[in-house]
Length: 340
Image 1 (cartoon, rainbow, N blue to C red):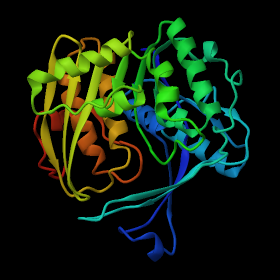
Image 2: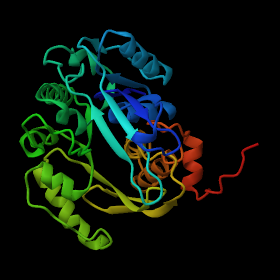
Image 3: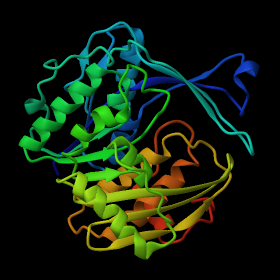
Image 4: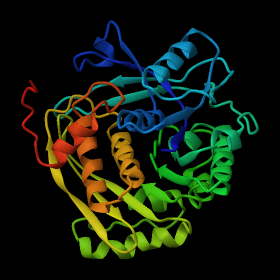
């Protein structure tokens, strides 16, 4: 099987323990993660060859991040080195009616100061089936956005499937550009887009649309607009999330191939252990389904939703669920009994 390549930033994650507030914390738990790398970890767990491309500082923290990448069985062959620091984010995990909070400390991180021409993308994309990027990377800096576009164009030229997670982060777009200034050029090459319609149209600079996602029969006309704006688009997926509280989520999903809407029933997730990375788990499930020898759209969306749900039960950024565990949830086995 050919590999999946993802491109983005891996960060040091510093999170409070036991749902403490930042002001209560005397120490932070250190992990690593980042949207595109999280997708690579999911797929690696499913037995799919993966490679993560990024820029790391050549210091002890950068080396620690590299060890985490290798630990997760993700190739680091084309990672480049430079810059002064690794991006950091602080996480205060919510509980009940108090939501989680994220504080970013990633200005002038190694990848923020990356430049076009630093990475040999034609070499990277040899024997590659899928290239995955997300809206987080072009939100970091103009440099990161330019390199992301550079990668996308080479991937398209080489016939690689391009998957995109919109991943809008309002706190990140701070370098003088808005998504509508950057994202249309990037998204026009996408074969697969994950995201809700309001976010998609906002990023594309189009009028906001508020469809009733429960009215399944009306969805194609809204999704078809996205296909018009993105001429290479083949599939759209949307995660449905209803937040009852920080500790109780309802998760479903929609998959559309321009011919038919496929939906996955809502699943209850309670208690939530760690919500961060659950969207990346969903994306990993979509890519896994697309790569299967016999692609089944209904099973793909069911698998993605189950993977997303399971990620809520796992601490850290990564979805460490196995194929068997996800498939058991797809079948309806949610008892959580001890496996002996």
